[in-house]
Length: 89
Length: 142
Image (cartoon, rainbow over all chains, first blue to last red; front, side, top):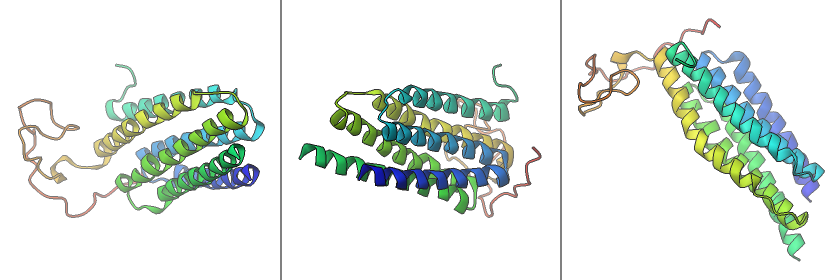
């Protein structure tokens, strides 16, 4: 049963990543693309977690924590670059 | 019996979580404006990832027999950072694409946080004109 749910989850998250890739390519404004990248990071995080369940390994959570932190910091840095013209003043 | 209930719980949480993530990311494509588009990823996708993380926690605790609390850390981190990213993305959008004099008045001594200095000085530009139409968003250059 978990295997079927995992297959469904992989397909749904792949479609979600395609949606974010569409917005990343055609988003009319710059904050749209930043938002699409942030969502893409969160979807990829969920995909990594599902992969960990699929293989029964809990080692992948360190990778998930790293992805979450790097995604948040890069989003803030990019927005700050737009707002202030510089990342660290 | 416990195994069976845990399996059903994990499968249900995986399905619910990935569906919520898909709905949130689809809202990113469907909705018309960035300020409305912010709702999808910040609420639905965060909830979906939270459900997937709880499913993973139940799976590794009950079915694999190893207690893991990494997921709680990730969930806490995501729930803390989602409002922050939404706030700062909205601020960047307002900074680039919304004119100051098209905003409604704040009806208090301080002005808008993105445009006006903090404190009691009040807004630099009087914001009286209400928003009648969404501001024109020229395509970004790069």
